[in-house]
Length: 121
Image (cartoon, rainbow, N blue to C red; front, side, top):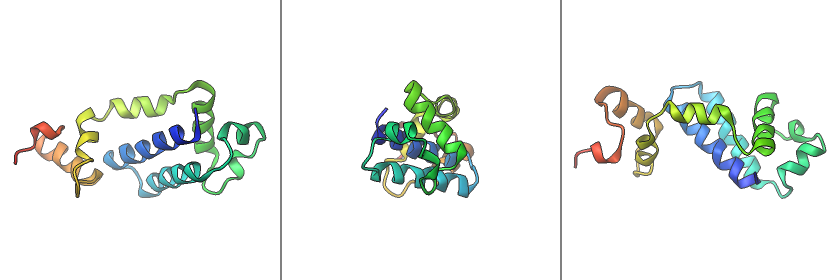
């Protein structure tokens, strides 16, 4: 996996964690790691091979482990499992201007709305 692909997954993980009501600091850690990976000029695979991944600001042991898993396998079990626990339509709803993860969560939990099609105009 390339830097941008991994960064996109980290961004989605941040959204999923926010929808699930996870600790704001954990959400921010994923967002910051995604931004860091987008800005890297060197392929993350090379950084891992050099043993320098955890020396990058904002990438701790847990995130480094997940990034390594994505580079080595092209997949992340934690991401797959978390994504399956959230209705697919909630991601589409996040594309609506002004509708963020917190509001999408409320719509889903309080009103049972899990897709754009279920919203009334």
